[in-house]
Image: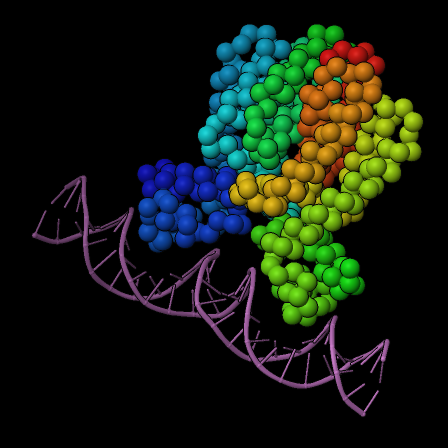
Length: 187
Length: 187
DNA sequence: TCCGCCTTATACCGATCAGTATAAATGGGG
DNA sequence: CCCCATTTATACTGATCGGTATAAGGCGGA
């Protein structure tokens, strides 16, 4: 991966995350990444291709960092808590402008597009991770519970992006809620 | 409200909901609503103004229909259930493409815009409605619980828009989950 | 009939969109 | 020194963007 290519990906990630995919033109990405137009089109033959690369990169980054947090814990319920903490830290980031995959799904009408496939893949991965951890907690309906937990996380993500007033307390509330269910093993 | 004005609003609502706000041009809205361009700009001096009108209309429609469903029930917990059922029915709509207010917040970077204010106002209204109903259920942390419930609903909305595979079971699961907390009055 | 308003059609504006063409400048390795 | 790939700068394409200008129809009420 060449330096210039990374510069473009990083500039595009920032811009897409903040302003959305349609609102950002390639000229703006080129200007922000300090690269010539020909260099841009050498690495990314089209804007759609760039968006796909940005999302794949973002997907990998999230998986890596969440996996690190999860690996640090020993019990399955504290591993799930690590995911909540990952979201909490993310919300406090200066450049937080919501989930890039949710944003993509809200802008992209084409169900069959690769962009949608990557977004689905990301949410599917996280759902499965949570589901397996819940299974380790002996939760019978771990699949449905995982979807429930993911909905809570995505719902708070959307809320934080709208109100930007800090959902730290709500994150803690949600975690207590989930933890209690795990401990009671009622599902 | 003139007929033509309504035609424009309805065409715009369909298009924005499906394709997003930036992706849809005024020419397309004009074509779909079967109206002359001058008529369009007579009623809506700018695209942004149209978006605001669309969102205000949508906000009013949702408040009205949810209020009807809530008013039909007598106990506070069945009133909350009515809100879950409203979402469930909405998800099954043919023209379901996610929440227009979430979509707007994902596309609009301008925190101070009227578009964001309308979107926040909508979510605030629903949160307060749920909060008051939870208070009637004698839930102490009704405010935080209301945010929690709203996050679940928005999270499932986002999920349904991404996967389009029906979250009926997940809705029922979520409701059982919330109902149990209400009945146990643990908060 | 004629007034006044709503609506229509069409052409146009400058700006920006994604993407291409051409060619000069750069810089490290042999 | 030259080779060769990378990167650069600049100009350009046709299409579409949001929005405006001009002017002619349509039509109900007085």
